[in-house]
Image (cartoon, rainbow, N blue to C red; front, side):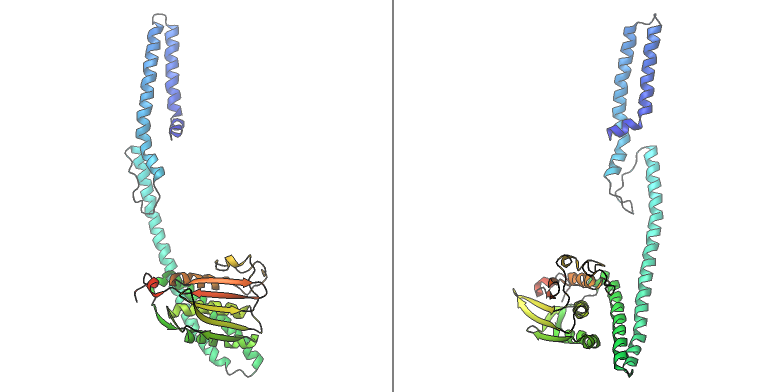
Length: 334
C-alpha cells in the first residue's frame, strides 16, 4: 500500500522537491544569504515533509486498507466508513450502486421463481393428456406400432418426471417425510412403469429381497430407483436385471445389477456429474446426463450412499447403502 500511496502522490512529492531545489538555487545566486542557513532550511523542510507524508499516509490509506480487507456483500454489511470527503463520496456511490443491484436481484429472484412455478404448472398440465394418450395406446391394434408408441410415450413421461424433480430438489429438505417404506411395492411399481420397454428389449427381473422395510422417504426413493432402473434397462438387451436387498456391515443395502453395456473405468468417477454422458460412446444422443446427477443429489439429501462398480461390456452394479435410524434424526423428525 505504501508504494501505491507514493505513486498516487508522486506529483505532490515532485512539487516539494522542485521547491527545495529552487530554494537552493536562490541561496546559491544570492550571496547575501548564507548557504549554511539555506541548507538548514532545506533540511528542516525535508524532515517536516517526511513527517507530513507519514501522518497523511496513515490517515488517507486507512479507509482503503479496510476496503481491501472487506468482503463485498449486496447489503454492504460491515463496510468501512470513510472519514474524509473523498472516501465518503466513494461510500455513498457504493451504497447507491448497491441499492440498484438489490432491486435488480430481487426482481430476478421473482422472475426465476415465477418461471419455476409456471414450468411446474405446465408439467402437471401435460400429465393429463399423457394419461389420456396411455389409455388410447391400449386400443391401438398393431402390436409393433403399439410397442413403438408406448416406448415414445414412456420417454416423454420420464423426461417430464426428471424436469419436475429437478425443480423440486433445491427445496427437497422441506418436503421430506421419513418413514418405513415397503421396498417390494416401490420396486414393483417402477418395473410396472417400464414393462412395455422391458418386453420390447427382452429384459426380465430377478428380485430377492431379504430386507423389505427401509427407513426413507417413499416419494424420493421412488425417483432414485426410477433413474437407476431406467439406466439399467436402457443399456441392457436380452438380459435379466437383478435386484436384491441385504444387510452389509449392519447397514441395509439395495443392490441393482445388470449385464448391459457397462461403464468404462475412465467414466465411472464422473457418472454423477451434471450433464455428463459418456466419453467412450460420445455419439449416444439419447442421454441427457441428468438422471444419475439428480439421483445423486436426492440420495445426498436422504443420506443414502451410492456405490457403483462396473466393467465395460460386462455390466454395472449400483449399491444404495441406507443410513441407520439414529443417523437419520438429523435429516428430519420422525
